Image (cartoon, rainbow, N blue to C red):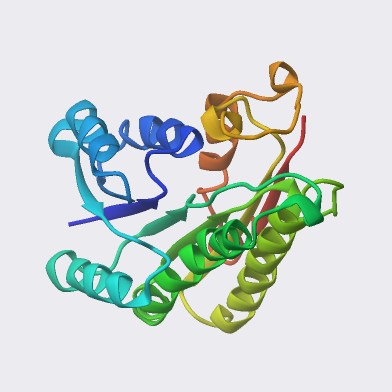
Length: 225
C-alpha cells in the first residue's frame, strides 16, 4: 500500500500539509511526541491516517518504529520532515539546556528518520522533503541557536542529496519565511506575525513541488513573504 510519512505532524504547517494530502489516495502515517494532539489529529483524519508517538531525537526509538513501518507497509513514497522547535534571544541570555534541546529537536529529528529510511528509499524510489526555515539561509540577531540548528539541517540535506545521486531517491529542501502559526506562541521575541504568510499558503506551495519530470525535479524552494 502506498503511504506517506509526516513528522512533526501536530505543528501548524504540518497540519496544513496533511489537509492537502488527505485529498489524495495515499495512507498517511503521522509522527509526533504529543499523544493527545496526535489522537485529536487522528479523529479528524479517520481511517486515512495512522499515528505514531515517537521521540525523533532518540535514534533507537526511530530505528524501532520506522523499521516496523518498512516491515509492515513497505517503503514510503514520500517523507515530509516538519519536526522542529524554536529558541530566540541573545546568546548570553539563553539557557544551556534549552540550547542543547533546540539543536537536538531540529537536527537529530531530521537525521534519525533519514538514517533509517535512506537506503530503502534509494532502492525503491521516493522523495524526502526536509522543511527548514529561511533561518537556514541567513544569520539573524536573536536567532543564533535556531539558525545554527537550521544551517545544520541544510548542510545535512544538501549532503544527503549528493549521496542519493544516481538512485531513485529525490531530496528536497524547503525554506519557508515566517508563518502565522502557534510556533511563535512561546517566543519572547516580538515578531509582527500578522504580516507572516499562512500555513495553508505555505503548504500549498510545498505540495506543488511534488510533481517531477522523468529526469529532473525541484530540489529546493524558498517561500518568501
